[in-house]
Image 1 (cartoon, one colour):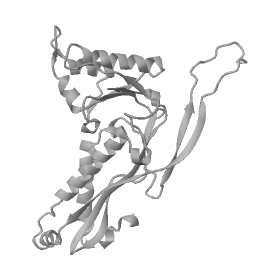
Image 2 (image 1 turned 135 degrees about the vertical axis):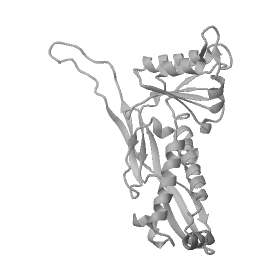
Image 3 (image 1 turned 180 degrees about the horizontal axis):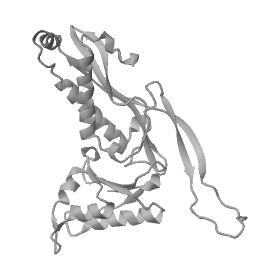
Image 4 (image 1 turned 30 degrees about the vertical axis):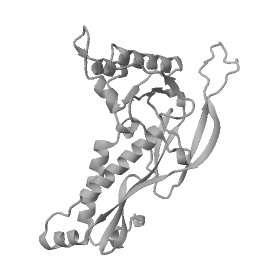
Length: 278
């Protein structure tokens, strides 16, 4: 890991182990997309591009006695290579904090690492769900070819349950039989925290049962939006070059600059496996 320049830092392996532990802990707690999108990698920090395929899928399966009827094969109909972007957040650790830790044996203050890792996690999920329009990378909520469902008012009646059920019906009609995942904005999650009239059951619990107990919430969706999708690497995956890690950038006005970063790309192979409820 020479590209991290850790040997140049004014502290040794014990501190770097703590830094790595903080970053991993934050990622485990906060990342949402990685909980259901298959990972492709890590491929290594030097891998800066990856192919993205378009699939031609004909689900009409032939049946005859000798296997002589012509069939349309499932195949890659197009391939392009795209850059794997890097996302990062820099931070500074005061030289006096490092010296105090050395002199007194007190733990080094790592709050800036925690906050920088949190910022990177939020950006990763934002890229997964919203893409990066400036660089032409689509996300789950705006990829061309996804299915779109007009949302009812989830504060009333059984609208949340009905919308999710209709979304699953759309997926099934396209040949996606699950498993499913539902991700909602925080306001919609709160709106499902109410007892369904006449049942004594939270609407959220009914929706969870409908999708197989996989309902997540994330603020990167903004407000009044939900995403329902069929899981599987044949539908989408998350390409990781360098997984989330911290590098040493060098001294700056006696303090020490670090960078929390990663390289990743969302590959959506079958956009029709996604239903946005909006």
